[in-house]
Each structure stands twice: as C-alpha cells, then as structure tokens.
Image 1 (tube, rainbow, N blue to C red):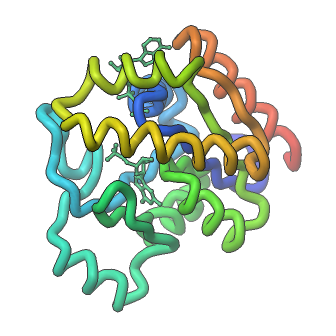
Image 2 (image 1 turned 45 degrees about the horizontal axis):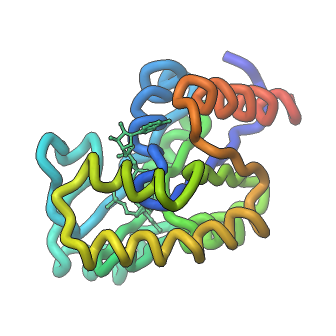
Length: 193
Ligand code: ADP
Ligand code: 5GP
C-alpha cells in the first residue's frame, strides 16, 4: 500500500452522461485502493438496482432521522428526492487506508469541498445536449417532463463543473474517459506521497 495522504475524490455529471457506467467499471478496476461510497436516497430503485450496492434505498422518514442524527457529511434534494453521503463510511474508508470516491451532484461536490478542502472534484459532461438526451432515453422509463428537467438541470451543473471543479472531461468514448479518470486519480494520489 502506498503511503500517500488519503484523498477524497468526487465525480459529478449531469444525468445521462454515463457516470454510473463509468463508476461501475472503476469499481472493478481500482476498487481495491479506492472505496466507492454507497450513498443514501429516498428515490425508488430502478430495475436491476440493489440496495447496498447502487444506493441504500430508505424512506423519507428514515432519511430525516439521519439528518437529525448528523449522519450525513452532506445531503441534497435532487430531482425531488433526498440524497446523502454517510459520514461514517468516508471515515471508515480512510481508516482502512483507502481513498474515498463519491458520486454525487454538484451541490454535494461544493459541500464536500468546503468540508474537505483537499478533495479533488472531477466533472464529466456529455458530448452534447442531443447526445445526453439520447442516453437518458436509452436508459430510463422517465416521463417527458422528467427528461426535460434533467436537461434543464444539466445547464446549471455544467456551469458549476466548468467554474469550480478541478478537472472536467467529456465522456465521448467510454474507454478513453475511464482511462483519463484513472490517470487523474493516480496523479493526485502521487502528489503528496
Ligand atoms: P448517468 O449515471 O450519468 O445518468 P448512465 O451511466 O446510466 O448515466 O448512462 C446512460 C446511458 O448512456 C447508458 O445506456 C450507457 O450505456 C450509455 N453510455 C455511457 N457512456 C457512454 C458513451 N461514452 N457513449 C455512448 N453511450 C454511453
Ligand atoms: P440518480 O437518481 O440518477 O442515481 O442520481 C441523481 C443525482 O443524485 C446524480 O447527480 C447523483 O450523482 C446524485 N447523488 C447520488 N448520491 C448523492 C449524495 O449522496 N449526495 C448528493 N448531493 N448527490 C447525490
């Protein structure tokens, strides 16, 4: 195990960019050194999603209890549902000598940067709005209104990513994107060895 200072990485991307696909590949490739933190949400699971792997799916009542208990490092409302990053799991990853990777929205990214100024924020963007829409439609059984909302929201996320994030990249070719992220993570790990 290398002796570099443990780092927190954040990946944010507008809906449909490909972040779930990318992060699942990263889990396979570098999951031994970096702990991908499973976050909590009140949204309903999509077909194939497993509680404890994709998210911890919980009720709004339970989520609010956890807010009161101070269980979240950050939490936010995204597309009408609550999402939150558990403090405990970040601390445990770091105690185990691992880096932590959070896949959260840009509101969450900004909160994490305040809490952990050394956190590395990586923003991924789709090649175009048209391609984003195509990817969203390919994946989900969302209503037209939900699709519109995600595309609208993407404009705000793009602005934050371009102005506040440490790295931004476009997910055109999936393999290249994964390689680039691996490179960024390695470079950052080696910075304060
Ligand atoms: P997100 O989690 O960002 O909302 P997903 O990972 O669910 O996005 O990806 C949305 C869809 O786009 C999926 O069908 C996925 O296979 C596809 N996809 C991901 N990356 C690419 C890419 N580079 N080129 C084409 N399609 C992609
Ligand atoms: P989805 O429901 O499509 O999986 O995710 C919706 C958005 O919520 C994505 O941008 C995802 O990264 C974000 N998200 C997931 N978990 C968290 C979290 O714990 N905190 C915050 N702020 N955003 C999250």
